[in-house]
Image 1 (cartoon, helix red, strand yellow):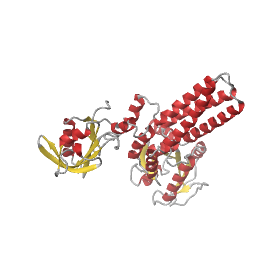
Image 2 (cartoon, one colour):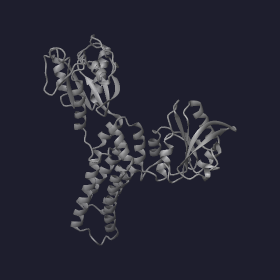
Image 3 (cartoon, one colour):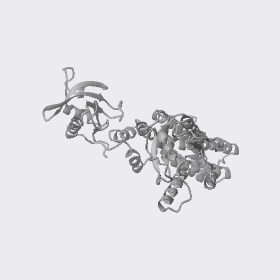
Length: 452
């Protein structure tokens, strides 16, 4: 990708709709768009003379023929999304007309943008840092209001503020240490060591607090994984259908109907949840059923929460009692199904439901949401929830800060202490993109949709 190119792409979804928007950005964006359009009225003869942030009615001209009536908006850099000159052409949303308008723009000097290239340019031009750029993608893909709010606040710089404050504090510590390295005749005083250690421990505590939000960030982005386990015919598939509000899994009175795991995404009380229906857990010699049971256990191992379903109308067998004991240490909700029948077993803390009548389903949803968020540490800052990339670099920073503090406390040479602190600072800088590589940027922005 050449950042000097003028790029263009469809910025709205492909398909028929009311309108579609073609975005053009780069140093020649206004000139390229001006070739493609004929402005209505006599006030402006050319887009080049149009004031910034001005929308005008125009015709898109292709081979001297008007192909659509459009609205053209001019944004002059740096007061645009990419901080470059940008033109947006809002045309009618038919598939053919949209393609012809885009082809006309490309034929007159623009090249097709690659996924995420507009946001990449915004980052490269200093319009936003890397955490804000990642938040753009999170905003687009948000599935719940909570995820949307977190992405919006992160776009405004909530995480950046904390990272930059942390980095500034550590740079001050490094400057203090390097000053003593430059003047070796002046020994660092014990009270100075104590003060620097206190600042390092405060920084380490801040990093650890951010790391505790990693699970929250993963859940907001990917959804919490909830495995539905239990013996055959307890109502696992029926429970999945009830929670989804649709018949997704086959329900049958024949034991062992489910032989494989079924995954479906849903939203429970504003939380994105990936439900995993599993094969019934029991003793078996059937090869296919044994494979299903193995996959059920894998799903349970990978789950954030287990819904352990039991048939409340029958006594618990020996094998079922062993399963209850086996999963006792996990984050789990006991779901006692068939509450519309005479209940012969009750468990303290269990939620009684009837998948046939819907009885108790709302109480179960409330319990699921409460258990999820009671088990997940959250940041005091509503706009801070780090992703997996942030987690990796902050774990490196945490380790290096720990080594820095240990070395300073043990009286190691200040050169070694400063080296570890620079490692920590480099890792922290990676969060906001202060130290980024082309491979890293390619990895992040390739996940964006085309036109953003």
